[in-house]
Image (tube, rainbow, N blue to C red; front, side, top):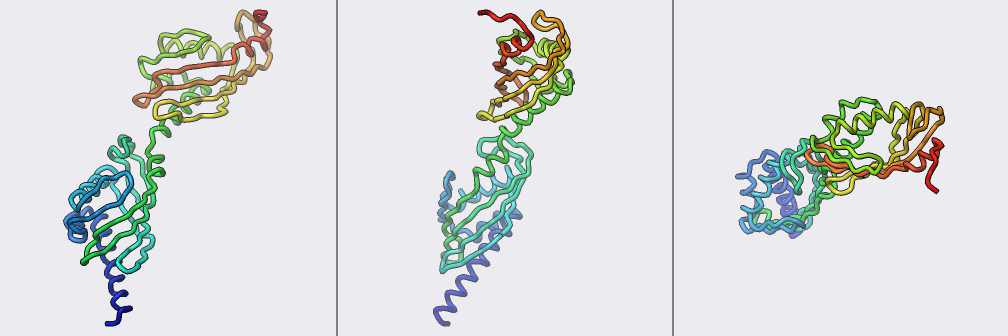
Length: 275
């Protein structure tokens, strides 16, 4: 057999070996995986500490247990004892991954790998995964932003009792304009302001700030239709802004900080301001 034919045979063997591995990986047949991975397997994967076949099998088992992971081969390239693969990974987030508890979300990401073949087994691997993309898909920040969006929606829809499922029982509000000791008090204030200013909140911005806070930037528009700040209804259109920070825990709002342009609102209503 010529050198070229020998190389071609080795390349074909490498590709077939990887496909055998991927089939076993997708079916969680770890005994079969162990047949194609060298006992002294070396893995070069940033963020993971894997040494030897047993360590690698533990990692694969964890991936199945937490992500119900499955790979689809997009491309395989061969060069001597190296096999380069591009794989599309999919799964469902059913366990803690990257420190994030299960969300039940479907996820997908890409990985590129270089495998070294030795003695008919996969002996070494270099891998780069789109772990940032995966982290974004399972991030609690997305849920937190959606929660605060719902707060704005139910307020605009005047569905005050719907706020009960969005706020914790021990909710604390920090607002220079008023002091409330409970969600019921807050609901009462919002309802009263709806009755005097007939306002709608327009979100100018909604930003996740870490894993437990969301910042809301709002412009309120309305009409002065009732007694407000001691001023009888004028019918005037009014507008004011507010920046609010919500702290989330257990999928509910537990704390809020508010800084609203109350002075600008008072000026629009003709309230005499301190000189």
